[in-house]
Length: 509
Image 1 (cartoon, rainbow, N blue to C red):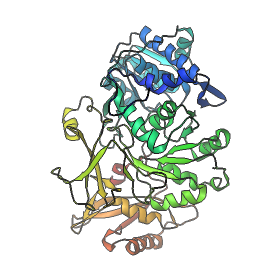
Image 2: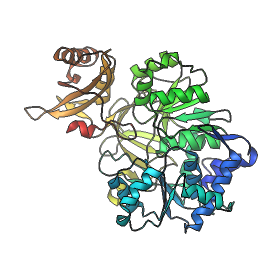
Image 3: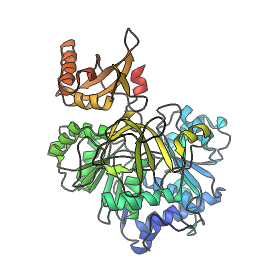
Image 4: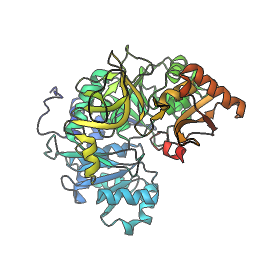
């Protein structure tokens, strides 16, 4: 059956659409590569059936929440799919949680069941008395695996409606604690059918691997759900995605599609071994999370010969809705709208601005979340009818390409003119001494906003006053002079979140 993204059936279950349709057709086909294991579609379906039985045996009822604190291992897939197959609501967070983070997520979700690796389980055990809703902790590699082995597979699907809650995706938490965006079953299928299959072209011969972890919606879609719905496969590894690990996976598994973020692209292309690696198996890379500087794109393309499709998605919209395409990459832009979505750039009153003007991005599409859990006021600000109002400032040109200018609270007005930190950062990155850069505002002695640049240098470069002045001059020569940073602060590396985003709130301090 071919699904129509604009007329999905009322009874819809994510697990069936993303796994079981392919598992019935080709159960012997590889679904997951992990270390020296190959897990077929039939085996993954069996493990998911067993997970369904385990969760039900532990009292999971439809619409109840289960929390995952699991690295990128096959058990993540069986647990995630098993929860939604049973009709539960699943959310996943980075397993490297601190005690205060674990306490927050468990009390916020009120999850009765937690699936965690040993490290996260030990963290939770230390605060167990402070999370009264939690009843069962299933530990990957121990009690979770033992329970799967003993369980009788449960092949039934909960009769979920396409608009039943299925998944929570968390905002980055750049302002306050992460908020849970409540997503429906239809949201994931809609994006797969409008973005993943027709735009990126996921297919049965694709083998994906990802630097971002499955706990984040971007990687969850790109490196698990999308290859599964296409009949392809993914490579999982539990370590963090360092350049060395990425190059190791590249050599061992010969993947066809790379899922990454600009920070990782920069780290890899700066690695001595990148130019010697054989990238010929990779047909395309996709990048999101933050805008990809044109200079970095060119260095990456020169080194690897691999095309990068830069795009933008969000926890609120599940996944990418604006993107560049193969054969249609416009440097510096995030590309054009994915068919099935609408977007507009608006002023503070919600009126669409003229092409080329800076405004707030509004987006609409059938993958939009219902709300932020337990946050009515913020939900009303963000979800306005069919529109999701982002916190991001954008421009759209006459050809329909979108350009990221910065988050609303990042934008600066210098001398009465808007300044996009992203534009200044891109200019700095063109200087041969600069490895990475971030620009934030500060108040000068007169109380006026001015740009300050934080710069990490390439190896062998010396941080001194002469270089700081040279960087300012470089920006003045590249952009309008008022956009040049008034201060340059040299640091070893930019502070980043576990999603790889620069923590500009830390820099402002």
